[in-house]
Length: 266
Image 1 (cartoon, one colour):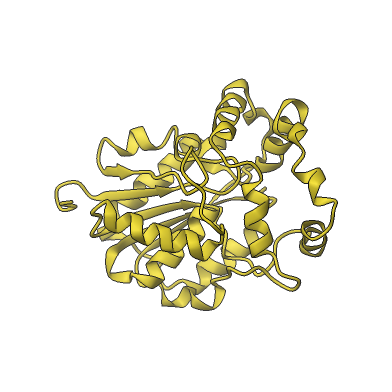
Image 2 (cartoon, rainbow, N blue to C red):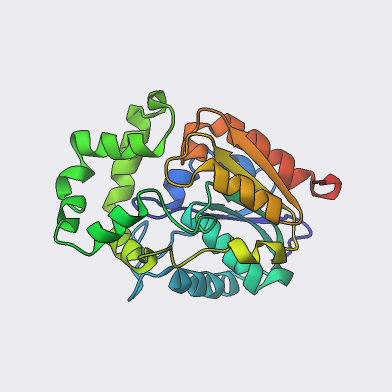
């Protein structure tokens, strides 16, 4: 793949009922005007086969194989939530193959998740069956789940709910909770890059909503201070899903960063 003609951008979606077509619906077509865009569906999402054990490390191993198979010699990575953690992991493992990173509401920046102790307990108790109840995947349960992700309830419209329902049909049932069981330890999460962020040598843009309930803004601010070449864009009133909740603000920050790499400064 000749990135000198068309710089390559790889879009990595998040966990749960997500897929490339859901989170990047309004981003990929615009990026494709100026970049070679690749947006894989992670294993177990978008109808792809699930991994034997869905750990973040296994997803990262899969991403390395996928990049090799797709012939991607060098690219910029844009990762949302779990996809952000995979982007960081890939950049640390193969720094010579990464132009720059965009971390969107990124996982891997916090040593603990909100309500960590309670979640750890629920994942190991019979009550976890309530979290996997089919009723949460439709009707009011679906609306509440999506509403928890966003900061502005007005962004939860019929289009978004329809897109989520379609993505659910291609997601392995219970996959999100199986992944969480591998991630959430008693004291901290398994994937935390805080101590390694200083090793990132490429320019990094963090895009974060100030109403993110899953990855508090304070963790993104701390990460931006640790990364040598970092810029943080805060989307006011936005939650954990900037590409769908604030598509114009997200696109504006993303385009400026990807096109202005030579003039990038802290």
